[in-house]
Length: 182
Image (cartoon, rainbow, N blue to C red; front, side, top):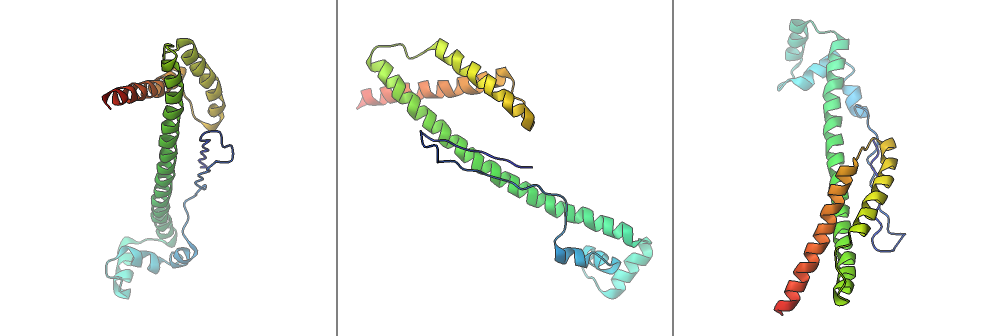
């Protein structure tokens, strides 16, 4: 699984960040694999007090074969890889969330500048044709994501960007209120 995110803050085309989570398959590290090659060592990993007698007793009572033990050990090792995959994935999502937050803030700043210019000139700050053009452009762009397994409906895109536009308008109104209070 590869996750990439690039941000383009402002007009700086060189400000791109790539976050990658490498593809993983359940595997144990070399030292762990060496431990898991014998039934005694596999059983020892599962015991609180792995004395040779306890190991032999568990193997004898369970009638476990080397294949069964190795398979169980590989499943356990896969759980370790899953935990690592989960931690890496969450770290990647956290970094992406930070970028999204930065981009939302930047969008609100730029929109605020435009709204201030409109306000100063007495132009209505709501521009429905422009909003619809934004939605249509982004809906068309979202078709490229389908190849990556990301399916965003036109309604989801509209909802997301309607919220972002509303955030910008709300922020602009709050700034006007704050200026009047000063």
